[in-house]
View 1 (cartoon, rainbow over the protein chains, first blue to last red):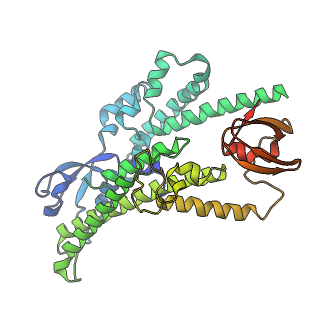
View 2 (tube, rainbow over the protein chains, first blue to last red):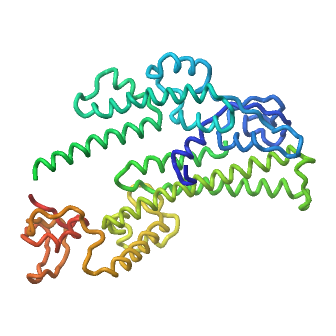
Length: 179
Length: 216
């Protein structure tokens, strides 16, 4: 993940729910009020929320804000993923589903979450690969299209790579045959 | 909300990555983001003003966190701006390596000479150049750099095609007047709509630049 990585920047732009713990009168613009009161809930982009959650002014003072897991990683979504990873359109949860999840795992110690995500990725990756190989021939069946629409950015990239790989391999074999 | 404009800029960059050509430079957005940074900086100065340089974050946490938000927002905007421009310069470098001309890239305006000089006027509204004046400058200088680099090996064309030619000679049609070129077999004058049977190596560059069309 480089500083200039466009996808990383967009991942950082995804919003996460937070709760303010302090009274900050100057920051009313964050939720369109005249100042943040302790306990205010608001959605902040990750780049802001992360720095904030880690910051603290004095040695023993609390961080000014507590983070919670974003809705795309809520109990319901995880339960659905546990049931059948292939049936969940990840893109509807977040276009940068895995990216956000990885960032959240940096901040939270959630072993179960990480295990679920790993299985999800592996199971879905196999299907992504399958579709990437078949996309050329069959002109996409109804069910396949539905699945591909639900891919998040990581999976899309995987799909594109897989598709290109098949295409190039075919081009190469054709060339060999010709000459 | 601070940073929203930056996101827009990065979304433009993302779209640019998947395009073959370079979309117009988002001068207005870039200006809006830099203005946001200036505003944030002014806010920081205003907040720190009463403290006369002896600010203790532990004493006034509200101010400290406001400063933090402003600072992070500025950093975020900087990152968005840099990423946007970097995506474009990467694309420009690629185009230069592929043999594109600044003039081709930036449309007719530059050919008249005047437009590139007036700063900021050439924003992207289709009819004018899709490059900012700075980008035009960048392309020109990068092209010079590449030419100097290539000049070290006169017997190899570093930007030439990697495909081995099937035929030594090919038929080409002239799409744009290109003037006279020198070949091993003498000079030929390329006038529009005429057709020639020439050595591929002699005209490869002209095909890449769109002056000639290869006929199969």
